Amino acid sequence: MNAFLARMWRKIRGSYQWRLLWFAHAKFNCGVTGVVFGPDGRVLLLRHRLWPLDRQWGFPTGYARKGERHEETIAREVREETGLSVEVGRLLKVTSGYRLRIEIAHEAVLTGGADAMEGLRLEDREVLEARLFAPDELPEGMLPAHRELLSLALERARDRAQRR
Image (cartoon, rainbow, N blue to C red; front, side, top):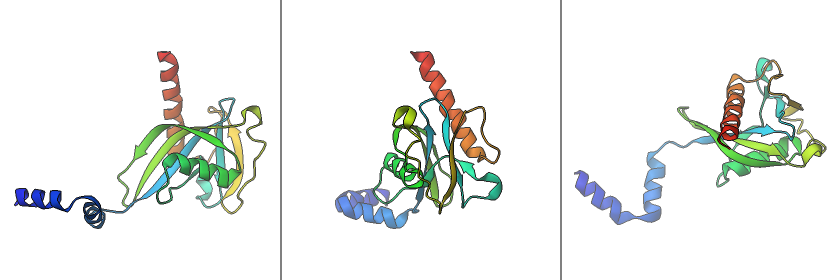
């Protein structure tokens, strides 16, 4: 039976294989987070209007649109929520195991040097406040998962510096 199924699979090829896979597998939303550093090493945090009151502070986040690369999602979300521009860097973490969602996190850096925060324009339907924080002076009410992402980003930066 397995040999027969394998022969049939090889015969249908291309878009028909993809359609069968699409029907047979779970569909996911892809949540994307940007651990955004300013030019001085501080991190950009947003106080999100729609998040629980005791955990409103976190990194820029959003859902990837169909066909959008994760790096594009981060840049778009930062631009939409703050009016700022970023250069997206390395992949930090992929988290799965949720029922209908995976989470992707990338490092990013604000562009524009010392004037990076000059173009700040908050999308007030979603964001109440945006500020740069030193990694050792994070606000109360920051999502624990985002604290972990920052620790991971700082650890990887130390590792890269030691290898040089």
